[in-house]
Structures are given as C-alpha cells and as structure tokens.
Length: 113
Length: 364
Length: 144
Image 1 (cartoon, rainbow over the protein chains, first blue to last red):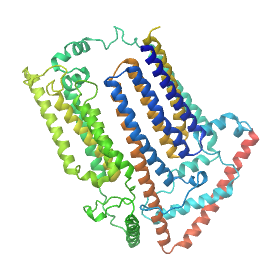
Image 2 (cartoon, rainbow over the protein chains, first blue to last red; image 1 turned 90 degrees about the vertical axis):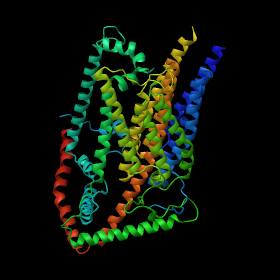
Image 3 (spheres, helix red, strand yellow; image 1 turned 60 degrees about the vertical axis):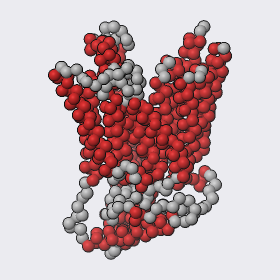
Image 4 (cartoon, rainbow over the protein chains, first blue to last red; image 1 turned 90 degrees about the horizontal axis):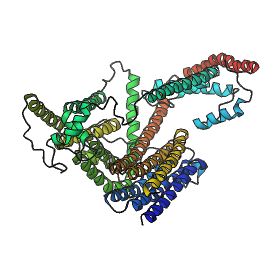
C-alpha cells in the first residue's frame, strides 16, 4: 500500500516537472511576451497542481496536506489574475503589438494616451 | 592590446554575448549621417528641456550612456574592463571557497559556537520563558532590548522617509515672467487633460471614477493612476481576508512555531498593499490614514518600551516576574512574549504600508 | 530498499531538475527585451521555488516549511500586482509629461531662429570629431 501510494505520487510529480520543462521551453521558443505568458502560466496552474497533488498523495491525509491544498487553491486564485494584469499592461505599453498579433481598434476609455 | 579577429561579428563569442544581453547587433561604423542627426536631436531636446520646467521627464534617461557606448575609441577599453572585472569576481569566489575548506564540519562538537551560552539557552530556555520555539525566546526574552532597538530602527526609517518626502521646496523667488506664464499654461493644459479623462470616465459602461472634488485640498488621486480593475477587485475580496488571517496566525503562533512579529507583520502589510492596489487610496483611507498610522505606530512602540522597562526593572533587582508563564505549548502562555509579538507585528505592518503609500503617492 | 531511501533519491533528482529549469527562467529574466518578459520569468521562478520548498518540507519532514511556501506564494502574487500597477502609472505619467513638453515647445515664444542656428553649429562642431572617430576604426582595421 505504501509503495502504491509512493509510485502514484512520484508519477504525478514527474508529470508536473515535465509540464514545467515544457513551459521553460516555451519561454525560449516564442517570440512575443504574450505568447511567452501563455507558456509560463501553465506552470502556475497545472504544474503546481501535479507536483503538490503528488506530495499530498505521498503524505496521506493530515494537516500538512491541507496546507498543500491551500497553496493550490491560492495559486488558482492568484495566477489568472496576475496574468490578466500583465497582459493588460503589455497591451498598453508595447510598441511591437501590431507586428505580433491582430489588433482590433477600439476606443480606449479613461487615462491619458 | 588585444587583437581583434577580422570576422569577430560572426564569431560564436560575439553572437553569444549579444544573445545574453538581449539587444540588437552593434551598429555599423559608417552611420555618420545618422550620428549627426542624433546630435541635432539631442541638442533640440536639451533646448526643449531648458525651455520647460519639467526637468524630471527625460526623453531617454540612458541617452548619455548610449552615446558613450557608441564611441568607437572606447570599445577596446570596455573589453579590457570586462575581462578584468570577470577576473576579479573569479578571484574573490576562489578565495571565499578556499575559506570554506578551513571551516569545521557542520554540527561537529568542537566548533566555536558550541559553548555554554547555546547550551544554557537550549536546556533552560523553555522552562524559563515558556516558549516552544527557542529562537523566539532568545530574541524576545533574553535579548529583548536588542529587538527593541531593531523596532526603533524601523520607526526612525519611516520617520526619515516622511521628512524627506514631505519637504516642499519654496517657489523660486527669481522666477521670471516667462516661467510663470509657462506654469499657467501647464496648469491649463493639465486641466484640459483632467477634464477629458473625467468625461471619458463617465461613460455608462465600466467602473466610474469618482469626481476628484471629494478629496481634501491638494490630495487628489493622480490622473495617471491606472483604472480600477474589476477582476482584481473580486479576487482581492476573497484573498485579502485570507492573508490577514494567515498573518494573525503567524503572529499568534510566534512562540510555538517559526514566525513571530516581523514575518507576521510583513504578511499583514502585504495584505494592506494588495487591498490598496485593488481598491485605490480612497478606499484605504476610510480605515487607514495619518491619524490611525500615528496612533498605531507610536502607541505600539510606547507599549513595547513599557514592557522592556518592566523586564529591565525586574531583572536588575532580582525580582521574579509576576506574569504567569502558563502551560508549555498553549496559545496563551509564555508571559509577555505574545503581546510583544503583536506589537512588533503592528509596527512592521504599518511601516511596510507606509513605505508603499509614501513612495507611490506622497501621502496616505 | 525502503521507501525513505528511494524517496530521498527521487526528491533530490526532482529538485535538481527544478533548479535547471530555474536557470533557464533566469536567463529569460536577464535577456527579456520587454518588461513583461522579465515579470513573466520572475513569476515562474517564484512558482518553481515554491515547488522546491514543498518537496523539501516532505523530504525533511518539517511542516513549518509549508508556511514559508504559502507566504512566498502570497508575496510573489503581490509582487506581480504591484509591479504592473506601478509600472502602468509611471508609464502614463511619462507620456503625459512628454505631451506637456511638446505643448511647451510650441508655446515657447521668440527664439526659433536661434534654435535652428544652434543646431547647425552643433552639427558642424561634431563633424570634425565624428570624422576623427570614424578614422579610428579604419586604422584599427589596418592593425588587424
């Protein structure tokens, strides 16, 4: 039983590490910040889920695994928001935006342009 | 003098350097026309800067550095400089690593730190102070005076930042008419920009920025402040209470587990900063302004000083402290360490938020 | 072979792999031509650090490290939020100041002629110096 739990947990951790590796590859493969963000956000949600899930399975149910679940939950709250803010900033300040993606011209409200 | 290969631009080392720095390839040498154009441009911008009083807003803060980097005479010197800097770093690293080889093994018995002081702390610490976490017992009971000094350093740092930022220069006495006229023009122009921004912000959809007349005089929010983000607000409503709770948990568990005043206060300050980033200074001022800041900061420091005075008095006269130590491992135990942790946490949280607010906006 | 021995090897190799990925992220954070690239790379560095801390806490059986990981998660989220907000504010202020200055340049009365003369003098003044420095690389080429 212990061995089964350990093997399942380690498989989950290996999956998470593979996802992080793919994300790091994406950081160098893509040419523009928004695409890179797409790759890197994978670590923040799926990668951390797989690694911490593996740790929870290895550990069994106790107070520590509850804390690990809290970390996963916090990441699922925080990571999309930070990606959203970052993308908003990039769209506003980048001068290479039109070379890299199709931009639909809209009125920008508020602020100074 | 180092010799330069003919096709150095195509060599691996040069391309790798460019790759690491992430910039474009070096410019060609024969761009004299462009250089002339650039010099004229620089002169013009300098003139424009002299004409306006907004000296802070440079077009490009690295203009001089870039001009220096483009001088072809300097290139060889720069290369030698790089090599020498690298050699220096390598030498220092080697010396440090050699030092490490002479250190005693980790945890061996005859290290100089294994003396009677550490023994005493470890053996008698928990029964004398009533804490499980020996580090907290050391810094808040045996060396409480030291920690008091550290808290004072935070207080003085915040005070000096406020003195520097609140210092207002007098309007120049020899301001000529021209300068006055320009200031007036600037004011008019800014008013137009503000009016445009407000008109744009009052469109029916989206979050409407409040009119700036609700602020006290001279405390308007900058019009360049980013507009409030509804996604961030909704997440902050969930996350900020969680952060506060976690900070309180760290504060109250300072004598049982690693943590305590400084880290718990930092977490609470981070929660305040997140609240501010999501909801803006108007919302934060409803519960945290100068008055609350002054009361919390000075009050917690004075209470802390009182506790320290009590410790010093009892210790110097050999009187046993009347505060009960409680059961080992309970939340309410270990005498005055819990209130000290709370006071230090409040102090640190206030200082963190004050630094953020002062550097961001100038006031609270 | 017991579980602690195997898990020691496993956790150690996992941490080494994560550290290699962290070096790749560091390279992107140093290179990244735009500020968003740097922030993305630093954010990913923080996530990988949290993975390392969690794995360490299970390996060493120290549950207090999980508190550290939670605080680290909060701080890295806060860093991204505050950086984006502050940078956006600074960028807009910069743009507004530039706009104001253009307005002043139009407003500045009188000495347009002197500006032009000064620019011409600057160009002719730097002409000689530029020629001299342009001659230098030619000499260097001969040296090679």
